[in-house]
Length: 575
DNA sequence: AGTTATGGCGCC
DNA sequence: AAAGGGCGCCATAACT
Image 1: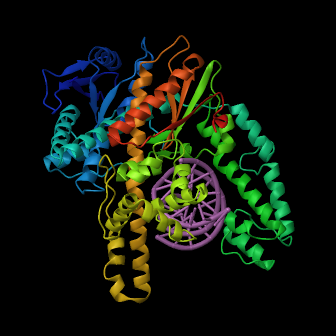
Image 2: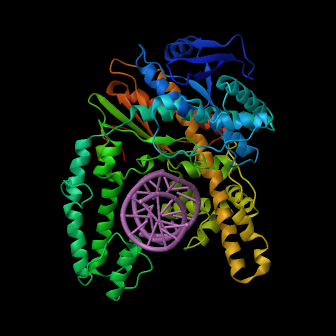
Image 3: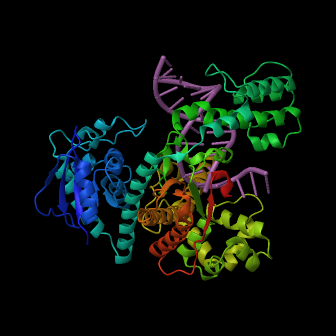
């Protein structure tokens, strides 16, 4: 078993302190002092390939990564144990959801000291020297940060060891490793950035909106023109098309009653202004969310640099902070182009969530449908007379808890043909409706119901009337949440395992053109920027990583998790 | 003036 | 075609 090394950077300088520890967290030998932390870390990484134990990758790794990049070889780190992320996983598992998870908070709990609240995570990363400052770790003044890292790590190992059931414990450990690996990948992707051609983005914006306005804050020509035509189509009185209330009023004055300004509602309207309104919304959104201001803030110097928030979604999916990394509109993918001599290897897991359901529930019949290429096609052939659309609709409805529409008969067929899988999601829904907790395959726990929920549902049925209705609504909403959680969170488990496996395999690959590296991760999709001569090898690695993830997360299952992979120059050409 | 809520829509 | 689950972000409206 390779060693673990606890690591604490200095408050101000380039140095830091380290201590070898055992798996259980006992210190081995004497602590080390490093004048040049990056140099020492690079040497130890090459010699021992340790698991780095630190307060959080988010605070420690980015500056270290920048320093490592300046060293010959430009090594990255293989593995870590992220105390803050692991603390969050353990707290949720222990039913202490919402307790602060910083190193300082964990330390304070150990010492029965007042527990500091977590800092808000708003705003872009601060200057590097303050990232290292001890106050960011939320430690009480005078605390030795290295001692805190050692103590909290040892405590976490004890809590991991205490998890009931050998298989569950092993899976939770995998979750801990994958979550931590994700934190490394997130920092590396933030540093590398997604290749972004500003001139392509510009041309696209100009085509859609007209030339960039000289005065910031003014509307581009085509948007302004649309607004005028919209006014004319609605009686000529000026109004602000960005204001829902004014739009509703303008339509009402023409005798058109709308309950909202949603696009699908406008589409059902037979009025010349409806189409203009839809077009206006479309363009206004691109302008405000991904226009020139966005480009200035997030996509300079040929790279889009988002900030990922690992574990930012309760299901274990990542969130992002600023830049909307996980909501890049499809049309803007034109601007994502590989460097000359490089390619983008774009891969997404095909029909991940229904496959996860098949593997999770152990439904043999559904697993047979998930053993090949198109799951919905197979499902349709067995249960829906070849109607693929119906098969897809029904299965999605079952996973999301849909009740409306004409979905009832489809669900009935699924219940009859796949009782094990349907029983699985329905049991999860029932647990939620009763106020219980569900967990993902690897053991990530969902949050408990809020106090407001308990107030709303307690005795609501007996009370009758409106409060019964309200209680019933929130009961069912909680059921839909837990029903979906088991699938979405287990899919996130799998995707995280894929990411970790792929990252490890990519690190071993290098060519004359450079090293392939991850540049994007979005729920069930990865993008690798690779020298052209390595692109096909990368595609093969992705397949291998998916197989490894499937085995690690679901063990021996007949369910396949195929990746749909494309080697392209431009992201928009991947699908 | 600054903060919070809402509506709406982008992604999975 | 939308709707069911999860998010982030923007502009406006509604508050403190």
